[in-house]
Length: 369
Image (cartoon, rainbow, N blue to C red; front, top):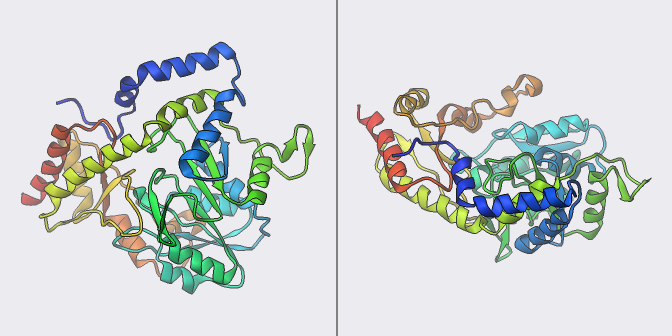
């Protein structure tokens, strides 16, 4: 059996090497390294895949979130609701713009934003909510958008971990990142759709917002050298766009491979009383950016897996309210519990059935000791 990787980017590359090498060489031959034709083509193909009017490629997923907030013309001190259990970037961009992050606890079973607690946290200063579609499964956007419409609040979907997932909204299935006013994603290499460096994109169906987002990402200019908005320099370079064009054609295949691996894990681990396997919700498909368990003796399990040459990761060990930069008082019982209970097993497109069984059975062995 080959060595097990948490994410096997080299193995994935070798399976598409010829297409990737050709795509990169075409960019080098043209020397159009910034805003080359592949960037425009990717923009069009992403819009088609997402069934979305406007796609704005950018430099990374954090920039995508920051640009989204900048486009809403929020004022210092305005409040933005975010889950307490998430990666730091979700809160980071809020603070950078002198806005106030308001942390809300998550649901213990789904890891997703607790919408009842969101409702309780809304004030007259609440201007935006950023639901995080964590681990590959989406927040209930039907309920969230109803709340946002009632209170005239913007919704920015953090879709960095769920690209390709589907959300049930108003009786129809929509692509994740296209239901809120703005959707943001990351193309970090380990993501379901990842490039070979940094990259990101912003999505919206609002024409006015689409125009402003594109302007802000381009130094605030709609026309070169004429700057109508305060902007940033956030471009997706052409080589990364060329790579993403190849991989976008395979994203559904990749997500299906993750779902099959998750099913194997489920079947082997379901009977173990010390483990809680990921819960699937009815209003979203799950594309398993991570396969995350809730377990007893989490740190001991991680050490045991390491001894057996199985990598495992903890996403995330500290809630936002306990980060030194964002220290906040309040009730975050579920977030605190998850920070001490979650562990993510290897999950990627190149996992073999043999590896999947070995990983899952090794987890079971730990709890039989």
